[in-house]
Length: 149
Length: 270
Image (cartoon, rainbow over all chains, first blue to last red; front, side, top):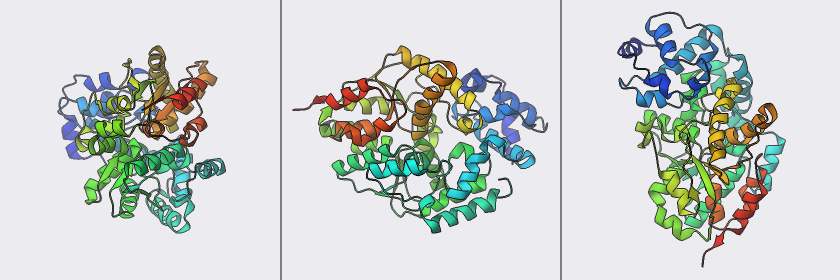
């Protein structure tokens, strides 16, 4: 969750705009890191479901360049978590997290991928292909986000 | 060392793994797969949902090894390196920085049996060098990959938007594909103008974004770039003598006969 320390850090912002100037995603979308973090977090307004918050690629360019050393990307990820707690998992991520729960992989192998590995002389050794490991991973996923999937 | 494949290499681009074993065998460095490992898990997307889930899965993966862990994916590198520093686990290395820092450019040059005189656009991928503090890298303009491709006889061509994100990270490819492809579109315009034979990446998620994203840009927007993307380790394996067929390149979605021919031919060293 967004901590007092985060808010304190955000309030040291001098509104220079380096973060939005550095944002690759912001060139094309309504993603305005500064606005999301300032309006919704530093000023205490609730974060509303806002597609733009999901447009951040977490490239950390804004964080690296911020002259105030505000951990912008990490705070944005926290803001996403807060939103997920309130509104649930965004629909478009549902499939990937269901796969993680079921197979231990966000991008599981299908038969064609297993065959390609075989053709290249490689074995199948990840949790998806080991019953005990897969069950262990599944339990961890279930424990933390079972209610969201 | 233990090789941590992650989802994208194990399940989508296994040619990266086959190439990596080939290279390490030739270098005489012992490496074996980290069996029973799961998704690393992906830093941006999983941290966006639950930080507790992120750290527990990462810790489990780290606990499977008592040797140093090697990755060939920027996402896995970021997650495992950060988690390892939190739980005081094993050392985590990315194959590109390992080759550069531990093996060295001069040694790589000596191991090349076939130079690959192709023109390439290198793409580092954001999570290779940022956050820069934990990775000990230049946060703006790293040079490792440029030197690594030049060590095998390729030319790293300077191009506009070289350090722009591929667009795929942070869950954007899954949660907002249109946005991911808008960023890719910009990047591909610049790469296309540089007239290169290939895009060289060091991350399978970036590879996937260039490889599958170009197909989507063609189908949805009529943009036909047709520039193959390849992981550096695949190129290095070929330069060290691996058959192009075994590198997995021909199984990528975007591949050109010209590139394959140039890689088969190369310039055999005396």
